[in-house]
Length: 358
Ligand SMILES: [Zn+2]
Ligand SMILES: [Zn+2]
Image 1 (cartoon, rainbow, N blue to C red):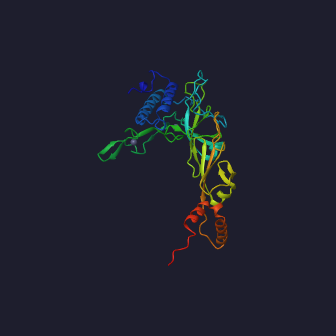
Image 2: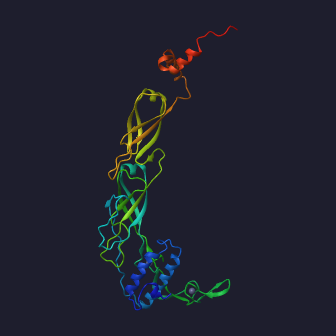
Image 3: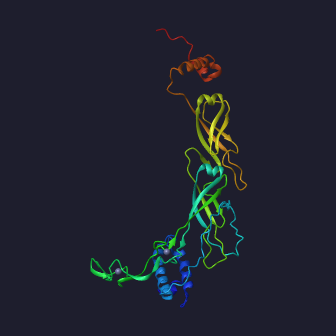
């Protein structure tokens, strides 16, 4: 295909126009960014077209300073406004050219999600290499003997001698892989952003950090970057389960404590808390503490905390515990009509008759 048409240029395009066109297309078609299976091949064609055109315009001089249009912005610390996906998405910047929004996944701990805090998010940008304008090649000051064919222009293969692919059979080269980007045509500067997590972030929430997304289009010098949208993933937790904003957990407890009640510690994402167990039966029961679950956001109420207490009976009775349990059981039997009414009814019915004469 005609290199001008491939880059969307008119014949006679200037070096600046060629670079601009290639940079814009490279941003769209680079295989690192574009999952299209044809992206690799198309990007190669674009690069070849670019090399052909720029070579024709510039050779042998390189007199254009690289256009410094896209210096990476500094960290936008704490500049996020914590909108979520329920925001209406309206945008008042309609008249300003704006870069695309950028999406990043963020795995959050239960603790950070529940209590909020600041977490660091590293964003790797993809920028066209300034040194080679994205071509991945740099022009040598002097032509150099091809190191693959040692100047012969041919390589010995299975089918005998074939033209050297590294120098196109010329025996010498005029370019080499760009030293600044290693031939990829791109640089990947990393930005580290401090992202404020609102208390009560849930799995699937989106946190929007204004102007931390993709840069504005190249030909828009007054443009502003798009937003960075952080997609929250809440890690599974070994103890907690979330149902909406309600926080559930199971806590084993001594059956005797369930009987007599009292204060008992439970671990919460924000730290331990003492809760009061009412005296009751030694059966499993669930305590609900209103408002002690995940904090509400966007006008929604706080979730509740549900603690399921599971009774555990003593096991491996030893010499220290046995006499105490004997004493306890004696007391229970003596007052069985009060403490153990089921036992009392049963024994009254089935016991107390003398055994039949042998
Ligand atoms: Zn060669
Ligand atoms: Zn480069």
